[in-house]
Image (cartoon, rainbow over all chains, first blue to last red; front, top):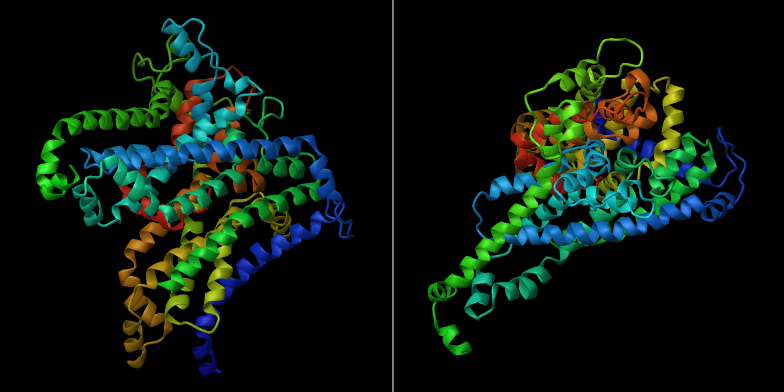
Length: 291
Length: 301
């Protein structure tokens, strides 16, 4: 008995973690999947109902708006975070004075919660007392910046706040990537007459392909899951103009008590994340095994 | 041209481009400072707004300097006005968050250390698959587990309680903590462990005598990561708790959104800073470890 215990101790120690994840991650996802095929309202029902909830989901105007917003947000969020992140990383890489301080400033939003970020930007962007008033007081009397209350433009305020929060993170990833390149490569290229611009554009950035890939995966992941920021900044409004899938899911589940429908929306999100993550994990594992 | 450049040494080349360099450097600093102001702007606005009176807020602009250190809004944000019902303030929720964060960080870090240890030093058949099995938990969108989790907490009788949130954060922290410890321990030479095993040291003795003493950096990284994630969480907090048991982010959001009385932006900003200050302090004090956690395990939004 004691022998057996000693031999299997590592596995016994592993068991709680595996059991918890098996139950709370895999079991729960399967439960949600199952419920998405039932006609559950407030309480879960267990008779299968086919793809009804998915049909209902894709016929819902609110869900379509949510998906639309997600696409707009993801595209802009990605572009701005990556462009700003790369610019800052390259510029910081030029033996800058006070680099540590600047880095700290660029990255501190990452330490704040999306609720704090949303609260701050909501105040800054509010038309009555925020940026709009600031410019008007400065003499630009016709200056208008009321995106926060504009149905068409409100989604872009979420982009502004989201980029503010995450661009520094992309900067950190790229800076780490650039610093891992041998100095000799850059020196050799310069001696060959390459300008600094060419060095980065033709040599260093192409070498950063894995960093691009990682940033892409992480940023898309953040954007699919974005929830807190919208709650704090717009609550999905004005109207439902800034609804996103994560917000749709919780609202459908907990305010509208459409458990089956919200499970279907959760599964759509799950699939979207899986489509990005599985290739990523696969390539990461291959890289690790190749080492 | 090409040839002459090739033959000139690196130093000479540097010399030649001195003037372009000088212009470039000015441009460089200009852009860097421009972005720095974009990043610092909201924090500045939050701080000055929290120190103004409502009168000053209405008359001045976002950037205007407060007339004095008006810390009343801070006192209201933290301790309320003391008129009972409807008076929401952050103090009790701040403590909720502490009571939630401390055990959740401890348990998830401990479990992660153990699994990371087994996965690298007591390897068994199929351990890579077990790692992958756990790792996938880092990536799932939590919406896919929200509904069954709410029911489970209800069945266990710990919905709307700090204990429930401790459980939730511990469980969903395990994939990350495992990832951190596994990646750290994999670089520790296995010979050390093998030698200790030959000397008759057991599973726990090896962990506590050999691995734990060299684990300080990764423990710091993990604790900071978990602390930041759990402190800043809103989804779980808002779904599984309300009223008295809510953590601070939920309370902050409720406070800001409550439309009962006249909006007091100075109190809102003071509240936001109070909710953000613990993670901000950790970031400033241990930025290096914060960034390391971020770049090695950041997949969560």
